[in-house]
Length: 168
Image (cartoon, rainbow, N blue to C red; front, side, top):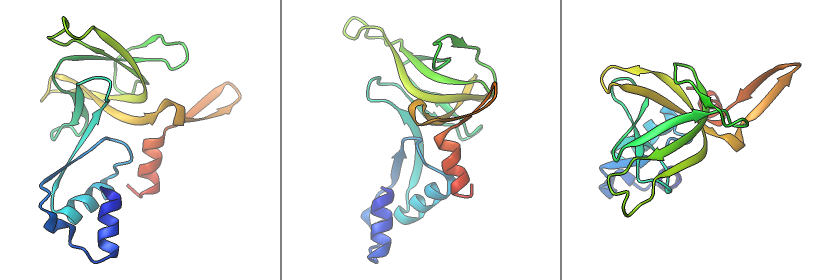
């Protein structure tokens, strides 16, 4: 969509006239400036989601707290350390690789799936409005740059770098 918006702008095409009312993004590289550009170019509302083709569940951005929350069908999200695969306690600021378990009402047709996504997420805070933890997508684990200084390590995740480069 971003490519279409930019190409339309460069060619003088009014992309807002296409009649698009709502755009869904997939929580990857969508900075506030990119979201504003898409909303302006198409005259549409942008709904930021996190989803996977492997599971029918998705997370959408909460208007109250700004974090992602899981939608139905029920999914049990957990964080694991990317190399040891040990569970990470859910608390604000905790980061790890996301593992999703689908708790679907139709398990007779679909087996219980526990899926290591390869994505790094952070726990933001407890959202009183949703009664659930908030989540922030940080990027793909394989795209994370790890700086080492002696025994200390500093991971640099793709998503915050996009925001930094975009001036957000």
